[in-house]
Length: 204
Image (cartoon, rainbow, N blue to C red):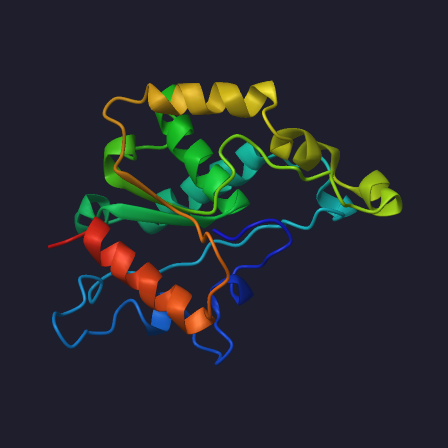
């Protein structure tokens, strides 16, 4: 899942137009075959524009519900239902991923056979305790901003603090990995390091 003001495809495309989700993850490496060779790689898109007035009442929980509903629709056969799911979320997309797994814990009868056991979570620069979304935003833009997004993403607000506490109580808690760039790097370096991180997190 992509982050604030992003979209389902450009978030994952490098400067050379390589979509790493579909182009790099399934590729075999020189020293070992790809563990994602037979994976079904899917992209989930949603309206993430801060000033998208058409969706001004939509909450992150609504996107989490949409994500789970689509996954449930796509997992029809016994083979489908046995597949593990890795949710990769960048920035706000990580919050949507986290909320989706939390819904499976708090609403176990709403999503069929899906449970937290089916999932692994990879968070990329996800602001688990909120962010300074309002700082540096021009006043006119801020006044047109989606109120729910501003509230849910503001730093250390009670809803995100409670969400982290609830997520930590999920039992069994899905395997998680958090990655964050600490300094500017070239796209190619970011992608290479990220793929290595995935292989270390989900080995055969």
